[in-house]
Image 1 (cartoon, rainbow, N blue to C red):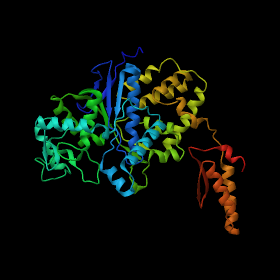
Image 2 (cartoon, helix red, strand yellow):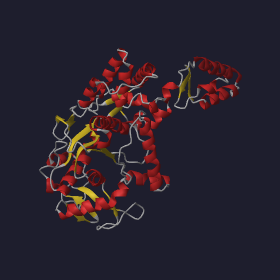
Image 3 (cartoon, one colour):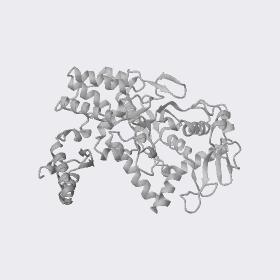
Image 4 (tube, one colour):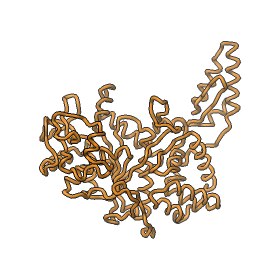
Length: 460
């Protein structure tokens, strides 16, 4: 590759510093990222770590060689949310998790995310979790009580809380911990819990039950990447308690404080300046946006314009600007062979704690200089301007105003004649062509969706 001498620096949550990345073994660079709990479509916030760590994965492959990087991202497919979804829908749990897992992969694929080398599902690793829990009990770091097994935080008190920067006493004061009579310390967390007959369960030394949430990542990363590996990533909402608990379990099982060397956390996402929530009506799944006609490549570019450690604001204005940018770049690079490597300035930006916003600024400079080959090679490192992402841009942009007038006029006539058959026919034809029809007092708006086919309009 010749890029091995490129220095990558990453902000390590564990040390609160930007550090030079030095892999344990440059022949085997390993990264673990916490994946989704699969009970529904992935929302826009779930997609942010996927895109962030996809860029890091691409950068590591570029610098160390694709065959020397191993990326694991799990699927949590045993969880109380999934159990609740099964109970309310009457569908078997396995059907729900199989469907939602595939949805996740499809939707993230549309955002240009490469599939990780390993995508372990929690239910495939129950024996490994049981073995790790037994080991923690044997080493005095966990105890069984009333069918539960709990991690004893006091057994690791000096180090617990290092990642999120809180002491155990602070945490007890400020935490909404589940108080239970069988806990020795209110901060002790569940490694195993009993399952009633109607819930998923596995045989264990402590009776039929299921794992707690945190143990799965410790067991799966150990199994796939070894007891110590390079990078552990996820959203900063996972820092406490999930990652804190993972570190405690893994270090106690390993008998030292190794586990992951570099911890990376991405910031959260907002929509139009507000926290995404169903009550505000600004809650979107990735599929919602794709169905509304936002191409996956456009969504990806909007994400990359904000540094991963800053809160990201999804706005319609940004999406429209990103779409215009990508159309321009695709026109400029059409039929061009990419340069043999990405521009040094783009790689330098990415190597500086994944400064994707800086890398995008460099792409604008390459475009302005007319360096189409350099732009193409550099954009592709970011997962942009790839062939598989480009279908949306080859669809001609078409002026729909004549069709909007046609429907508006038909509606005005129908208001007088009370015969809405022509309006209904036109609407049906527009929907069949892949347009979303928005009618209001002010007028008619036709919005192309992802499956828009202009040929179907010609008959009208």
